[in-house]
Image 1 (cartoon, one colour):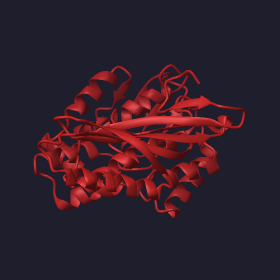
Image 2 (image 1 turned 135 degrees about the horizontal axis):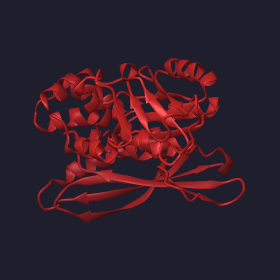
Image 3 (image 1 turned 60 degrees about the vertical axis):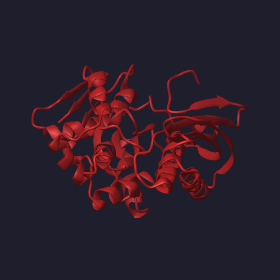
Length: 304
């Protein structure tokens, strides 16, 4: 499939395609075991967004062996492995290099039937948009680096970032949806823009329905925001119209780069309420209908 997607998809036969993706990054929390869990959940997310089943994984490690104790790496790898076990994914290898800055992530291979691939670029007019996790992990991670985040704030984002998108993926496959992407480094509006770029539809986002961490509001109002947020805004500002009534902190949250964020799902209007109910029953408590796909304005997002 020759199009820009969240993962590479290669058709092997009429019955089978493979999904391939990789992701790695520097630590965003202090606990190495939790960092490993987050990195694994994040890497798996692209396969879940396509509606696929992840099967195998390979570790990617950059480690400053001369300045950092090897026990730290052992804890990171243990966290990643435990999260893979939770996802029923087999670790089959990996590669490491010595680097001045610690980085960890994984390459994931999954499978899917070619006719069941869920693309991100195929939302349809009148679809409803469901977001499955709250926003604000980038802002709170920035606060962590400057020792400003409370334990409550840290625990909140850790719980979310270590949660697999597997159940949300299974439910959307069961119900039937038109498009899906996962919310990561480009932020909510950046990834939403990818869904409609070059298509015949646009989006209207109801900012009052957006789930976000309360602490993200506090830090955004303080000006504690990551540099990536500014880059996301600058890159997509020509596609997004934000009403003056939307608070500045919420505008920031909508562009905030996420790690291991939720799925943004475009689902037919007659299935949206059913899917949301099933998600809530499955414990995906913060999932919400946050907007709709529209005919006009084509190729643009209106945030009201």
